[in-house]
Length: 182
Image (cartoon, rainbow, N blue to C red; front, top):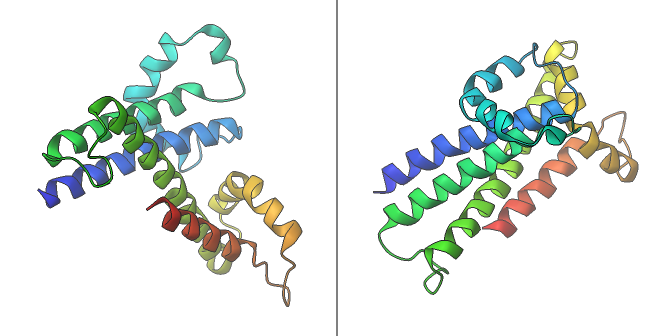
């Protein structure tokens, strides 16, 4: 049963993360023609396009890609429902909660974990590319995605010997957030 839960968790982490990345890229007005745009579109189009067609017109012209974020929430709810049903017994800490309460809580936990782990992956990719291939087109995309998070940290943490430590500080803060979540 643990293997099935692991595979289910991995699949939905991947799908929820792709939907969140698509929404964040569209919200930041990044070109979806450059990687990872085509990849996240290919992975999430099956759920985002029907949601986009069913949403109110006012939401379609908003600065936020609501369809992608709603897709991430729906995928997290589906994963939480599967986990709750497959586990076969109440989950730790949720013995007294019913299905209708436990599933949204599990979905919220998955969403938060996916955001934190996804940001950690993006930050690691950004840091590694900045060292080995600083003029890569992907570094510009990652920089635009991560700048709203790195800018406040850069205002607080000074550069040391010409090295920007904001990525390291943000990685530590995200790890603390993951520890608090679990």
